[in-house]
Image 1 (cartoon, helix red, strand yellow):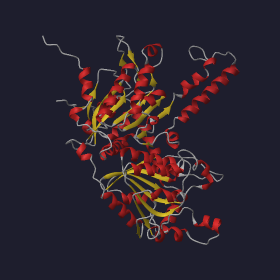
Image 2: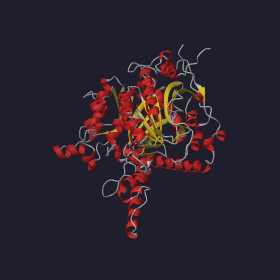
Image 3: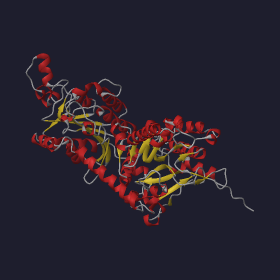
Image 4: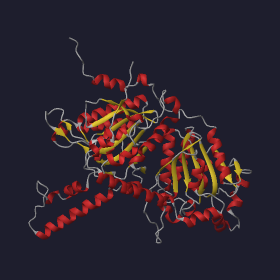
Length: 580
């Protein structure tokens, strides 16, 4: 009978070659983790304690307090988009919009994962800033693709009007949120909205398409607030009077029920989620129980070198991510610059595709080795076939990227890497199975695309504090930009001291600018990645993401492991043993 055998991998950190000389790297990673924690706390604080007190004075919870009360006790919340708009200032007074004024996160509610979208009521009364709509839509997209219930915690005063030109009109502007509401509804994805306070204009439209809408006594939903109505129609009214629960629960029927306060509303939402179909996760574990890795995930702080030029063993990383540190490697002897195989995360099967950073033997030149972290012909063909097999079997794919790009030069062109790479890109572009991409360190050039980078629609892309996302390294780009002034050894050709100094300074400026562009916080700020996660947190995020991939039934095929296409790959790669 066909069967994928999961075997133990990895070693204790003290026995791992990756740990040799790693004290400096570990110290640097701990420093970066501290910076990450500090910046997360800064974002979570919104506009500060005075705004928290203002919310409490109204008898309301902050948005984060609502999420903590909504989730199952003792479970973690997994935010995405934490650093959207991080450090960006608006207007003459330099206002900021921490996390673009909205919290998007995955949380477990009544033993099911849900997508939570909550206006941050400590940031300009939950108004929408540039990138707020795009952030909301990204969370809705994940929910749509995985058929996860969506919970809207609405406390929104509408667009932040001074920046409305950057929020209102575009293809993914505020109006696209309501299209996503509609697509979710058309795909039978449950949507439950709780209205806790202001719900003006776009904020008013967002909950209406939801299956259930609840309002507190302080809440109102209006197309235009009282101030605008006063200005346009000279009517002296209040927003609560024209759009409160008296109107929308009992007259307009735009809301279903009224409740006294935040606590009661959150209880209502939990009751609605409890009534949904239960999770399919136990069914798809195929008799397995979740198990922690044999080796501590905290080891990853020392195993993943902070310096992108230092080599490590990616199988040691995989051993800290999979259940019981078990892994069934596939096509092990083909394209060893890539690692492919099956593991379990939280008891659920996943395909894993990872870059091997170590030197590997050249397949056609005896005694010649090739650097890792690069896509060669054999590795490209291997991961294309494995990706297609996982898609056919319904196995979610986790991509562990640490890639410098495709091989280049005469051999690469003769072997047709453009064609093989196009086949891989086609495969990942047409896959229906959920893909989760983790940018461990380097994510460079077309290799970033080929290994399911964000433009190829993974359901989630995570970065780490040492991720470097760019076409190429700053030094390489500077050499290319100033190629006409350099000799074959990339040395400045001019003998004029002043000219040499200028070229050197200009090259350094280009290198520094590109290096700054590779900062993971910059990528997260402009939504080029979903979240920055400390390496020791990767296991937790993957457990949540993989469970979400299996939670709902009926929207994608999930094969029984007996009939996987993945089995065929190993059979075809077997070396026959001839009987005498």
